[in-house]
Amino acid sequence: MAKANKDKIEQKLESRDFYKKLKLAQNFEKYSGGGLKRKLQRILYASKIYLPYLLVVKAGIGKKGTSKTKLFWGRKIEIPLTDFDSLALRTYGFAGGTEAELKLTKFFIKNLKQEDVFYDIGANYGFFTYLAEELCQEVHSFEPIPSLSEIIKNNSRNNTRVNNLAISNQKGVTKLFMSESTGLSTINESATKIHTYSYDQAKEIEVKTDSLDAYCEKFNKPTILKIDVEGAEGEVVDGATFFLQNHAPVIAMEIWGEGNGGDISKVAVARLRKLGFESYQIEPTGNIQKVEGDITRLIPAMGGDNFIFKKN
Image (cartoon, rainbow, N blue to C red; front, side, top):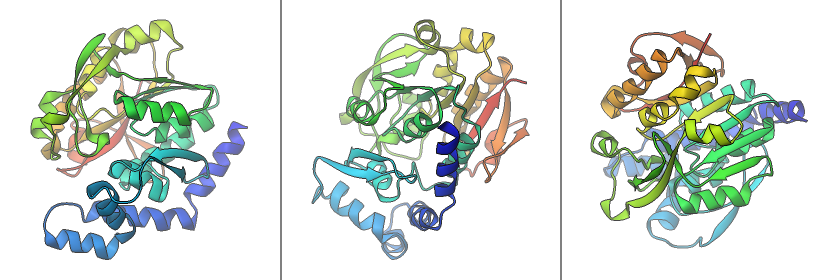
């Protein structure tokens, strides 16, 4: 069954229909930013996303409650249209319009196996959780925003455990700093001061935290992890030191460019390397190539990308 699912998903990812939708998303990303010129470019080149974004998310007109959505391989889920992340997922059935998300998706499709235990740390609306459900025997999804965690729980299958908490370096409670886009929320206050996106102090919420070391004592240990926690990668690694010293999971982790919080990413990379992990860049095909040294130099200064870390 997993092999059939993998073949089907690969075919859909290479389909003409998917790339037409992806082009819209990439245009929205390409022309993001402030100013009248950028707004006109988004209207011209990405109107199918930008106009609903203005009406539904910004103005609050139209869509209320939840909306049925098809992911790019045909699976149906139900999500609200409360911010750009959810609207974009509904529009083209994909995690994001960036090349980084596309490469990571291809990597997972190529490398996830039926016997894998997948941890999705920083799940947002759950795109990679749903993808892993198709290909792995077991999935653990971690999302600290209660409303998003509930959405994932409602859409997930019985091979997934959904956790409404943030993975960090200890068990407890901490502040989650909210951005206009839910996918950019973070528990690392330092990240809010250097990241290019804005954060709203009035929307800070308290969330539960736990460490991977403590979690892995109670549940099956991951063979592959996705870490996308907007600057809290160092805390995740710190809280997983015992597990990572004694096991060799494959780790996919988002890294920021030098002008967009890269110094925070460098700390997390250094900690993983100290634990015996080597770094790999994901190619457009989803294959990987070993890279050494300062990997933030491989990323556009104001952007981000996903890298793979594994032991040999």
